[in-house]
Length: 118
Image (cartoon, rainbow, N blue to C red):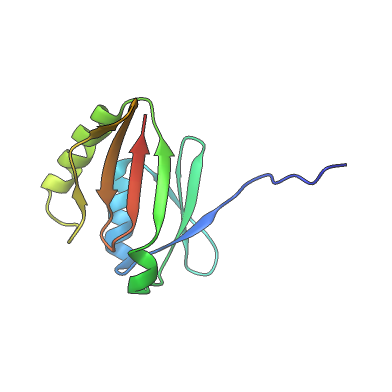
């Protein structure tokens, strides 16, 4: 019988755990308590584990690719979330076309890059 994986969960750093939890919640992720002081962030079939741990070099090189139906809708949503101006250095760039692919780059409060692709 071939080996399988039922679920893959990556651990994402947070410099300020409360700010990061608030940020991902505002984006629409459902947060549930993990173990060891972590939070599971789930939206649809996507899940990652937010941890209260931060190393700048790691966070600034961490990327999450999210395949979505509508990049422009996500752009408007993220812009609205960031208008509250309570997420520190979090930012969003305008969507761009790369060939036939539309891409949106969002940087979370501690430097993690979220790449929304359609």
